[in-house]
Each structure stands twice: as C-alpha cells, then as structure tokens.
Length: 203
Image 1 (cartoon, rainbow, N blue to C red):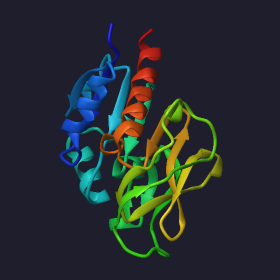
Image 2: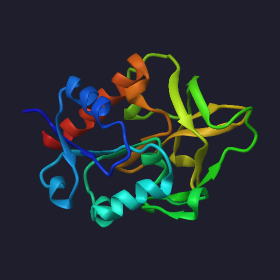
Image 3: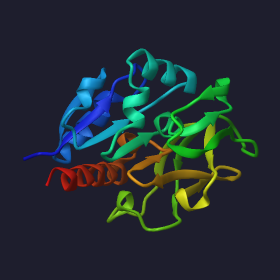
C-alpha cells in the first residue's frame, strides 16, 4: 500500500510539481485545505513561496496552525514552509508555528537579494533526508534564512556571500530552504526520502 502524504494547500506553494514528485516516489498525495485532511496521513509536506505573513495567514485561514503543531507524523517544510516552522520571522514580524526554536532573519552579507539560483550543499550531519542523494547543486529562491537556537538542528548549510542554514531537523519535523521540486535529481531523491519516511510510518 502506498504511503499517504498530505501537501498543505494554504494558497502559496508549488503544489503541482511537489505533488508530482511525491507521486513519482510512490506516494498517494492529498491536498490538505482543512484539519480533517490530516486524518490517516503518514506524512505532511508544508510548501511555501512568497512572504511569511502570507503563508501564515493562509495556514490560519484554513484553521491549520494548531493541527500542524499537533502532528505526530513526519512534517517536511519547503522554503517559506520551512521558515514558518520556527518561532518568528523578521519578515513582516510574523509569528510562526514555533515547532523549532529560532528566528528567521534577512540575509545581510550577500551580493544580491533575493538569492536565486543553484548552490552547493554542505551536509553538516547525516540525516534521512539526504540518504543516497547525488552530490549536485540545489535550487534556491529566498531572501531570509533561519537561525536555530539549537545548532544541532542544522543538518545542511550553503553559501551566498555568507553561510546560511539550508536544512534542519528537530525530531519528526524537518525542512529545506531550497526547493526539492525544482532541484532535478537531487530534489527527486529528497522527495523519495520524504516518501520513505512516510512508508515507515504506514508499515
């Protein structure tokens, strides 16, 4: 039986390409627009593009803030969807989900903003997200990045005039600042690992 993965539809995310990548990796995908859509799922993916407040407003309008906070299955955030896993963001002074202690701050010592394009990852510690992925660049589009309170939650970094956090994990909650759905073979391998985590829940 295919693992069931919910992709949160809060109005700001690359839903089609993320969904296609998850289906290709063997998942049954549902688009979650209300709390009841989380019932019976094995994993949740939280995408996000644009501004932090827009994403949080969409989450709140759908009544998903507390259900996301209460999940006991793997939760994987992408780009702004990863940023809102933290306590707060300098962007819009937004109050986020508070699942990982830390603050999202604007990149300061960079040649240009937003940071758009392909960059290498530095894997800081082994993690199931990065198991068996190709050693190739990944695709970023962002002006902000998280600063976790606990450095041990950092699982990958990258560089754009300064080192910044590119991936995090705290228990069953993880995320990437880059876009797996736009990162070629690397991204497909990461989405396959997300589905693999869901499969272990459903087993």
